Image (cartoon, rainbow, N blue to C red):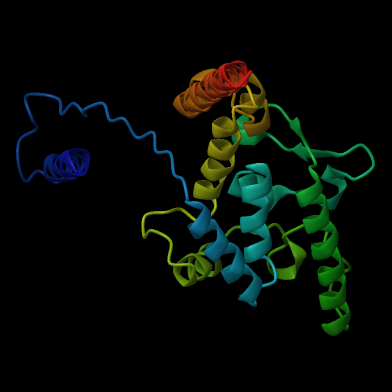
Length: 244
C-alpha cells in the first residue's frame, strides 16, 4: 500500500514539474524495499474441488493448462510458447523455451502430463475437423490463440474455473498452481531443493529456498516416525519378555 501511494505521489510531482505547475522536489522519493515473495498453496479438499470444476468446464484449453501447471509447475508464459515439437514423447522430456529469459531447459514429461497431452491432442484434432474448412492446418502450438497463433491471454477462462471451485480470491489460477506443485514436492520429503530448483527452472537457488521449510517439516516428521517405530519395537519386546 505504501509503495502504491509513493508511486502516485511521484507521478503527480513529476507531472506538475513538467507542466510548470509547481517547483521540483528538493529531495528524491525513495521507494521502500518490499518482500513480494508470495507462496500459494491449496488443501487437498480445494484441489479436489478444482479438478472437479475443470472437468465440468467447457473451455478447451483453460482446464488443461491448469492441470499442466499442477502436474509440471510450468509457468503461464512457457505454456503459451509451448509447441508440439517441444514435447519429446519418446525420451520423456518437455523443452522449456527461454524460461524467464534464461537458456532453454528440459523438464521430465511425467505420466500425468503425458496422458494430459495425448488427450488434449486428440480433442484438438477433433476440434479442427468440426471447424472445417480451417484457414490453417493443425497449429504448431499446444495451446494456440486466434488463427493458430501463439496465445497471449487465458485469464477470463481460468478465473471462471477458480471461482467455480471456490478457491481464495487472491489465488492466482496458473502461477498459484505452480506453487502448489512445488509445495507438494518439497513437503513430500523425497525431493531435495537442488532437484526442485531444476524442475522449476529457477536460475537462482534463492528462489527455491522459499520451500525449504516444507522440506524441513517433512524431514522432522520422518525422523519422528523413525522414533515411533523404534519405541513400538522396544515396547513390544518388553511385553514379550514379561510374558515369558
